[in-house]
Image (cartoon, helix red, strand yellow):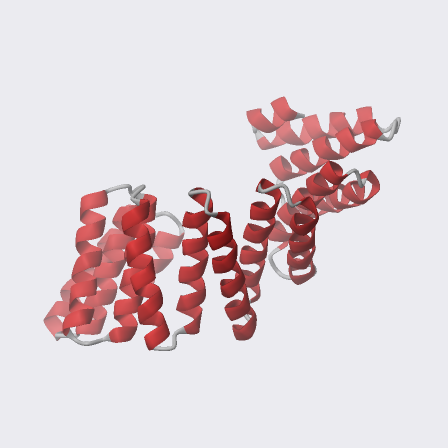
Length: 278
């Protein structure tokens, strides 16, 4: 199971399927229903990544049926959540929402706070995509509270970024910046410098939209330094292009030099879109 999960994380779908199928054979031979569920769930997730709808849903339903037959409420909640995510991936929002709401109820009954937070975040995404911003915000806020209670920093950052995007899309620029600032505070100095880089660039653009060019420049400059430190020339090119645009607004003579640097980073990344943007 662990090998399959690791391979799936690396997008090695065929290798993951081989590992999960081998685990399934061993679980069935040993009569271990829990391991059988996990193997089936892994197969279902791998097929979802591969875009193979029928195989994915079939295996996830088999895992769910085993959990229900064994009265394993904790795994029932887990497979409902995974099923909901797969249905969303296959562009079936109504079915996904039903599965996720069932998952939320099941997770609440077994007091699995981490799963509740994860399901609420996914529900928020579906509501946001459907234009139901009030419901999306409520889901995100509840997920954030749970993640904060559990001390899950990465998940808190994820939800704060989603809240920032939602606020920006609904014209609440000040709130978008406030959520972004909270996310940055949690991410700053942490091990995930890539996430911090993206937050910095996004905050720079939000502050530009608000007219705070000097604040935006500070975010862009930090974003460039972070992107270069983690070896992400395409992100560095984005930050440099945005920084140059801010310098133009301030009539800064260094803008042309910054644009040239952005172009160089985009070419180094082999990113045609970033090069065109620069």
